[in-house]
Amino acid sequence: MRAVDLIDKKRRGLALQKEEIQALMDGYLAGEIPDYQMSAFLMAVCWRGMNTEEMANLTRAMAASGDSLDLTEIPGVKVDKHSTGGVGDKTTLVLAPLLAAIGVPVAKMSGRGLGHTGGTIDKLEAIPGFQTSLSGQAFVQQVKSIGVAVAGQTGDLAPADKRLYALRDVTATVESIPLIASSIMSKKLASGADAIVLDVKVGDGAFMKTADDARRLARTMVEIGNHAGRNTVAVLSSMEEPLGYAVGNALEVREAILTLANQGPTDLTEVCLALAAEMAVLAGAADDVDAARTRLVRALEDGSALAKLRAFITAQGGDASVVDEPQKLPQAAVIREMTATRAGCIAALPALSVGEAAMRLGAGRSTKDEAVDPAVGIVLRAKVGDTVSVGDVLLEVHAASEADAQACMEALRDVFVIQDAPVAKPQHVLGYIRFVQKTDGDAELLDAAKAARQKAYTPYSGFAVGAALRMRDGRIITGANIENASYGLTNCAERSAVFTALTQLEHGAFDVAAIAVVADAPEPVSPCGACRQVFAEFCAPDTPVFLSNIKGAVRKTTVGELLPGAFTPEQMAYAHAQEIPLDA
Image (spheres, rainbow, N blue to C red):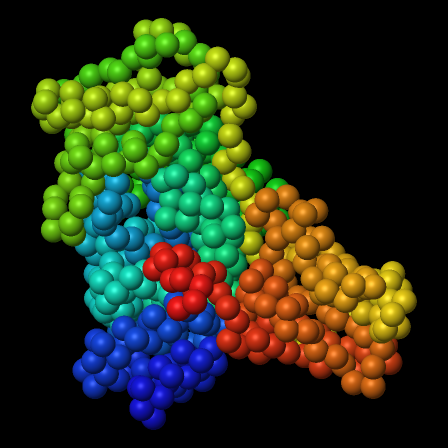
């Protein structure tokens, strides 16, 4: 098969088969498909998207392109965690020993950070003597021995993803949900876990700035993971302000120690317990998240989580005395305080500004070859919802020099938004995405559409139609067609249901799992073109659509199959960006 034919097929919005995707990956890695053709394919995906099966096949092809970890020697269900990144995100440092303390094996490969602050490996290496390079056998043996190991990525995991990402970075194809999700999940599949929990960050300091975009990414990754045979759950968590108080490698280790001693910041503790509870349930350590949370809180309170941290550090060559004497962690040469110049309540604390300031101090890296300074960073002393007086300390800057400290404080002079009116403490865990098994029929949804049909207003055509949407959280929203003497003012059942759901549901909760449409006709009737476009705008391409008549005949299709060449938001954005005139 020729690459140009596959590019053309995707450009026209058609789904690629498993063999076709594999041929693209094999040809590209072998040098038979040049960068310009792969770039064209990536752009076609950006414009046309992929259904779940395509994304799962792309993910598997990338995961199988290199080495894979074999964790079968480790007893029990191995659960991996992935975060989409943020500022002050030290959750792995807490989760790994906490889960191990309740008997959940943690075998995690992590990377170094590129951006605001160091990655998990950079943070662990701030502990004197800690070794992050482990052989495969040593890695597995340590988990079997003490229940936990975290090491730097070894071997050549998902090399196809590395090459594709480098190409996406220079062809403006990074911001594509199917490509982002496949990239992340390919590395998770290659890491050998049996189940996966995803921490999808939302907000100023996150890659996904809005709840809708984060939910789309989370849903896509959950569906890819489960389609590939991994039980996968996503947790949406806020990144409008930094997570916890510490931003910087050694500073975050210190805060993780406090959290495992049950003395950590409320937001960090809340997010860690939410993630750990999901991981514990997937591992079979608890029947539900409430039971898991009870066990996890007990491990924080009775000291077993902190004891596991000591064993973890010792096993990897580190100085475990830092748990009781955190002053042994690297210390910055200069520590300066920034104080409030007005009184009031903190209304906003943009995470990205704090992260970028920490990076300029040396806590992060702007290129992969840069070294990080483990001692530097920022410690917040107040966060959103706190009340401050003039002269109160807002943050500490930990810097290598006086000049660096002064430059950092100048950059952050206006980062705290302070107002007179009180501000509520923000919510940190925003929601969950769990897999909903799709079936060839949905009797409950079809019954709801059939009942909605009874409310249709059709004095002119007499052709009543009912529609029903099942949301990802289980709710069902219905609609019926409403006619008007002026034909153009008639509204179809399908659009009535979509518009009702959009106006009734809270922001970010519109997430359609399935659609049913029922009409009185000899054969199931397809939605009109306008309704198909509305579905394409607000639903994933692989969302199942059940078309039925009142006698019970059912035809299953998908949103993407109903309108394979739908006009997309990306096309609209392109048209606006290019200022294309109407008569072009």
